[in-house]
Length: 459
Ligand SMILES: [Fe+2]
Image 1 (cartoon, rainbow, N blue to C red):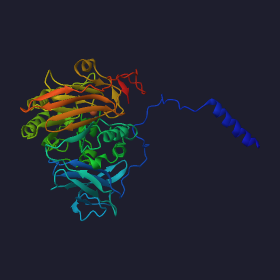
Image 2 (cartoon, helix red, strand yellow):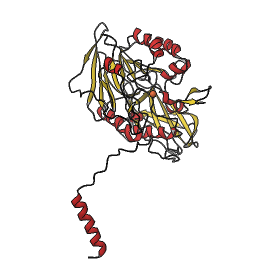
Image 3 (spheres, rainbow, N blue to C red):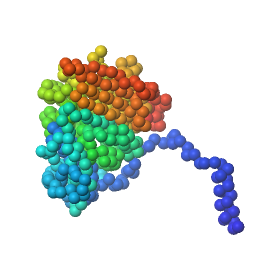
Image 4 (cartoon, protein in one colour):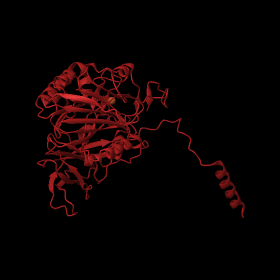
């Protein structure tokens, strides 16, 4: 045996005696916000369509909006749609020419395209694809919203915001596995963190994390404060302005209030009216009264048995030191007056649910999908149940004309919270808590984050 072979044999023996190598827990270095190193253009636009996302039209039984991205060689590309069949011969699709807008970012210039499918039939499976430079996306299948009496499954996610590829993707995958029949995905805002010069790579990671979800469910996001940017920071002229990605990234209904026309909208989805508010604009840009008047009208006209309000900042904050008084003073009376069933929120990176007094509705929920985790206030522990820290969650809602069943599940699929609203013949809603199989509320067990922040649990 040569000396080299002897050395290798000795090393193999020593490894055998030492047992398996166990990686030391990464206990000293906080993970970066994206997996993309600064300066890396992994998510630069190309001639291949990407960031493809469908969203509900105002009448989601009849229409779908689609947005996608390419490089700047593509102008006014085409969206094709056709009734879905079982043959690869898809037939002759309808073609819609997209409107194109430019966006220049740290990943270089890009074109974003929007095309709207309209005149669709309810509860019908469609095939659709979008065009790039001499190429196409996959054919995607999406079913339109059905009639109001049909049962609906939808997904609701809190803030994704940070480490979307690393830590958020498993939450979105777990949600889709738990509810493979979901047709609609609601996001409570702060999809990305932004403001770090890597905003475009963050959006790239969000779409990488979401996989096929934005093409095979209709995505309806609320805007978060992190979709805004600070201009002239730390000067007297400091102000919040809408981030440049938001208006081009989603093809949302154009029916919002004028004061926040790209970030407020409403739509009807199979027996539910869903109104989406812009909490940042309400709190920081003075549009609370205008949004309240708009919401009042949207809810007054609701012909459906159920209503949901989706917004980023919560009416009742579970986090210490946060109060959104203007939301409570100006918008909450409208929510109460119309007896909104669910108020779905994010922003506080914890879990908490509450109602008001003995009333079954509204139920106010704050949840979080991403890895950034805050701490609950003592007031939240006294006024909300269940509450939770240090837990990544997704929510599955099942709705028919008589029932609305809500489940919050941890990323590993365990039931964290659940209740069911039942609608009596006279329209009154009653609530039953679903406690079977729920795990115990979870608390943060760390004294500080890896970066040394004692006011947070993880970041
Ligand atoms: Fe936020």
